Amino acid sequence: MEPDTQAAQQALRAVRYPGFSRDIVSFGLVRGVEVTGRRVAVGLAVTTADPEVPRRIHADAVAALKAAGFAEAEVTVSVTVPRNAPAAAQVVAGPTSEAGVGKVRAIVAVASGKGGVGKSTVAVNLAAALSRILAERGRPDAVGLMDCDIYGPSVPLMLGVRGRPLIEGDVLLPPSNFGIRAISMGLLIDEDAPVIWRGPMVMKTISQFASNVRWGELDVLLVDLPPGTGDAQLSIAQSMALSGAVIVTTPQTAAVAVALRGASMFSQVKVPLLGVVENMSYFADDQGRRQHLFGQGGGQRAAAQLDTEFLGEIPLDPAVRQGADHGIPVLVSHPDSLPARAFHALGLRLLQLLGQ
Ligand code: ADP
Image 1: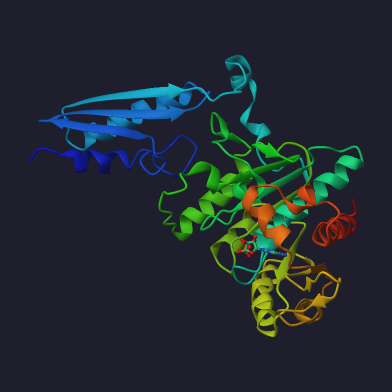
Image 2: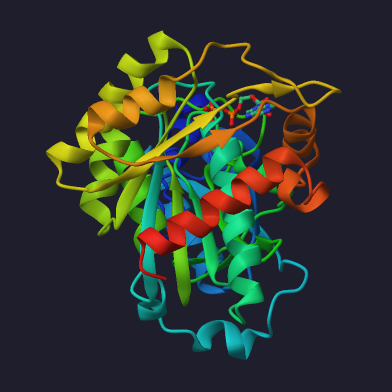
């Protein structure tokens, strides 16, 4: 039986993007496949400043297609060099050893027991607060944000970073906005691509975010973890030395048990808890009265039960959600608002706890 288009697609699925566990099909590189008898023509498009990437992909694709039974495999790779890419000489100059978290002073996980408590919102605004505080201390560009919430990566949207990161060899250069260097699966896959992750892929991605991203010199790297107590939590603790973890919860009584479960993994892997942040704590009305829409005291109780510090309350405020939707953290868009001041205080306390 002659191999068909499906066989060609199948073969291409076995070709990895150099340095990644993902294949060129799911990365969206395949533009066309045409089978005529035992001959196949494949068009690929790749955006990179590194000439080695298309070379490797071409060789691997030809080999995979031949192995699938095609007598002749014509693979065309069209290469787009990203705009603002440094000149080729500089691109190849950076040694791989510069990648990773070796020059990061403190790595802090931001975690929650379940989704929807505003964990990513807290991570992004805390990063913005840290960035501002450190810049005022003469240390600009000293904050990073690693979005490991690969099931629903929201950091690119919330932080207003777009476009594929530059890739040098197998090193990713994190784009930056508001002085925050960020990496996220949301920057590497198409928005509408189905994300079907299996445990091992989650782990691989996280370890690559830790070792293949050129984070550079940072004072603080925040890690936005997916909710729960699963693979991601474990692999993050294995991939890099965490200085500690911050747990995000909401005020409801029911949220406490969930927060406790979310925190328990960290004690198992001996990562210290730095404290609990309560989000959506209250809504301040026009007269400045605080309405506790979701109950009261969940964060305090969770902190007490975990024997850790209660780091503060973040109010529910439409400006927070608007900021998230527009890619401008409330700390930047409304620096004098109640939530912005709460995030600023949280940033100051976190730096104190980190001895910075
Ligand atoms: P998680 O990461 O826990 O799943 P998100 O950070 O994505 O949660 O937040 C869920 C939604 O709640 C988002 O639409 C976000 O804008 C909104 N949100 C989070 N915190 C606040 C807040 N303090 N005030 C208003 N909206 C908020």
